[in-house]
Amino acid sequence: MNNILIDLAAVIVAISVSYGVFWYKKHQTEIDAKREKGDALAYTMDILGKLATNFVYDLKDSGETGKAKKQAVTTKVKSALGDAHLPIPSDAAISGAIEKAVLAMKLSEDKTKESEKNDK
Image (cartoon, rainbow, N blue to C red; front, side, top):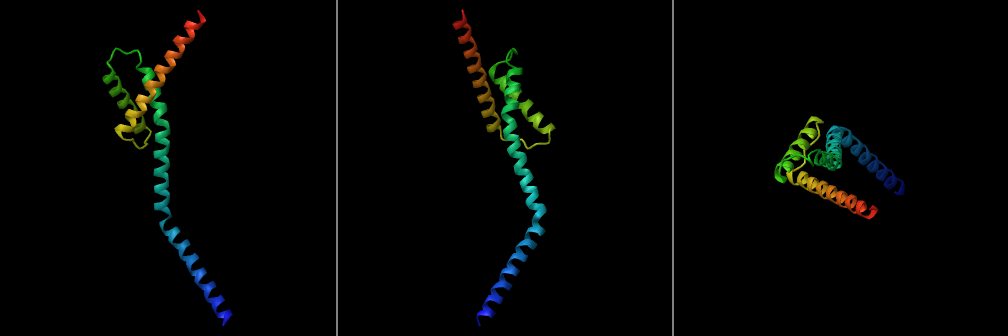
């Protein structure tokens, strides 16, 4: 009787494992596509800060107002991500990255001015 239960359990485990492998193979392309999409979004969010920082520094000395500069940076970021065929994050995420880049630029300028005063 024990041998029958052990054999039955082995058959059930084998069927379960083979069904799991079959299901994964059947849905592998969908799973891989979702993973690639998630990876692309993560990469986009990583590069968003770098793009915003570069474009903020590019427009630092332009004669435009703050809102016009922010709109120009937003347009450039969306264009760069679109050209790279990457997903474009929400306007709120882009706005946050721009504000963070502006804050970092201002802090950097303040430190530079402070160190110049200390050197004199």
